[in-house]
Image (tube, rainbow, N blue to C red):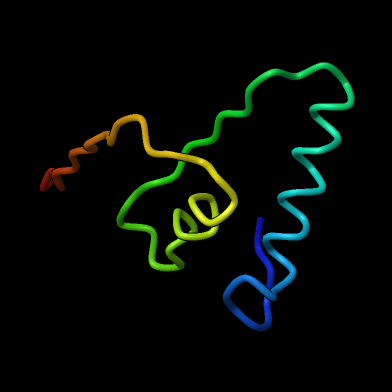
Length: 68
């Protein structure tokens, strides 16, 4: 999800996310799961945690350039 504009609880992001979660619940979903990196420059995890998501674990990715 990419929402330009304000930040914090009054922005559009939390409202859209909560609306999506309500829709999932209305269609029988019991849990919602999502993935993001903690190195995310937009700090999307702050949005997810602000609506009740909790971190379960953190994944580490490795990258190494290989010279040709």
